Amino acid sequence: MVDDTWSSALHRLWQAASRAEEVSALADDVYAPLLATPGVHLVVGTRWEDPQILRYMRALRAGSDSPVITETSRSVPRAAVREPGDEPVVTRIPVAGLDDAGWPEAELLRRTPGATFVVCTFRLDHRGWASLGVGVDASADVAAVEGRLAQAVDVIVACHTGIIQRGREARRGADDALLAEASLQMDSSLDVEETLRRVARIAVPAVADGALVHLLRSEGPEFVSATHVAVRQQRALEEIGRENPWLAALLARRSEDEDTVFLSGPELDGSPFADTGEAADADGDGDGARPGAAGGDRHSTVISISTLRARGRVIGSITFVYQRPEVRLPSSAFLRSLATRAALSIDNALLYELRRHAVLSLQEHLLPSQLPVTDQWDLSASYEVGDPMLDVGGDFYDAVPRPDGSIALLIGDVCGRGAEAAALTGLARHTLRTLLEQGTDPGTALSRLNRALRQERASRFLTAVVATLAPQADGTALLTTCSAGHPSPLVLRSDGTVSEVLTGGLLLGVLDDVSYESHEERIGPDDTVVLFTDGLTESREAGGAFFESILPVRLAALRGFDAAHIAESLTQQAKAYRASGQDDIALLVARWTGVPPGADLLPHPLQLVKAAR
Image 1 (cartoon, helix red, strand yellow):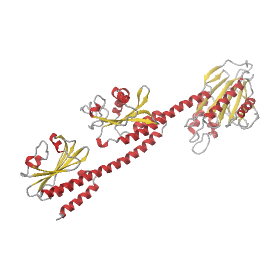
Image 2: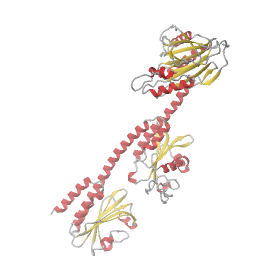
Image 3: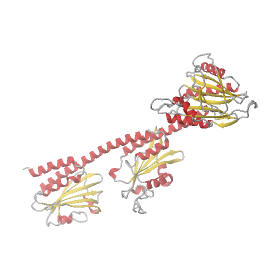
Image 4: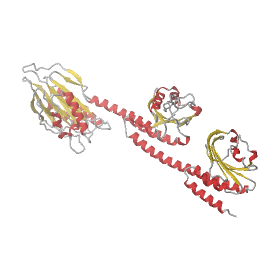
């Protein structure tokens, strides 16, 4: 005969199990129907961690609406023999035969003399086991009671399994979201130090309570970054990363193919992460100094070490410090994925840094290391790399003393970037420099450079302008300018007016046998000649206007300043102005200081000053 009351109760129990977020939420739906079974006077459940640590006991007696709940960490050594295998086990035991050393339920059961304890022990997960039992008197149908216990346990186990599965799915989704966000954060910077800081910060506190990043150098692991949820403990963690011999030795021993490893308990003996049993806060300020002991949380410290491997080579390691329950520790698969993404971001930043140094070194060799200076002129230059990928640019400049006492200023721009542009840059600057040092006039120098480019079958064109400053007996200088498709130089007069030097001419490397005409004008003492590449004028603001439109006004405002200030100021103003445009900016500025009328105009002794790079 079917027991409709129990069947209905079991149905309600399954419904509750499908909605429960914790197994303890099923207690009322389990205990009340069992207690309503004829002959049952007590229902008691226990939860055990490992074989013998009692964590929880809940008991409800017939006639009572309030359960007795005990939460503890009590060790019950003889309870280890009760630990079940993979399948639930139902046992009948006379209450009089229960030993308190193995049965914490005994004290409650003895209140009903002659009772029998019917108990089902079962495993919920790998961390421990549980039991659900009832105290029955002689009137109970023990077989029916055993059946109901087994059915209730089936629901509890299914509920627990479902909760774990849903938790895993939610955590998997959260992990995927965190990995995606970590990739975006780490990949958004190509600065090595910033990338290393982001690698540590992205995981704290979402993944761990603390993180340490080391790079692998030829001499061993090198500490580069650390972070912790608590500021004071972060300082301690940084000290550990830099100086602790235990951690240094551990990282040095790890092989290249070693997977993520978790260390806890005795494995941390002798380490700065060992659990000493002391209070987390030795000085009473609420912020424990031992890394991992955060906010008074007494969970045992666990650390994990993951290898940072990118493009087939090991570049370092990341160490996470945890002070949280075991269920909140990340999986090895998640840490491997995070380490792989971090390693690629770090490696990209390192490669970018190497490339940046190589490019800047090459760029320096394409520009003059020094500029000539006499008491007749004040020279300075500025060069700003604009391309974020740091390909070698094609902008160049130089200042060349000439045999007749004049000085030649030259500036140019090769189309495009990269190795080919760099080769043409070197060819153009050194060709012009050699010709101008020999006294060749600007127009002839540009024509001969054009011929050389055509003979070399250069696939790129370039623009250039050459200007000579020749001292005159009246204290002025003759400015002779010749251009090959380059932006016209500007002259800032001593009275603050700005004029454009009239130039024209076909760009270099396009046609054979091109000739170039020169333009002449006089400049006086404290007049300044400014030569520049189109990276300056084509810096564009968000509204679309070019810096070229305001350049004369900005230059006029710099009247009275020396050449170095003018060059640097214009460069920085153009950088601040532009919302788009990433071309390099090169400027060459010459301020004519003048010579007394009738002074000797022979070449003056030269000094050399370091040029701006």
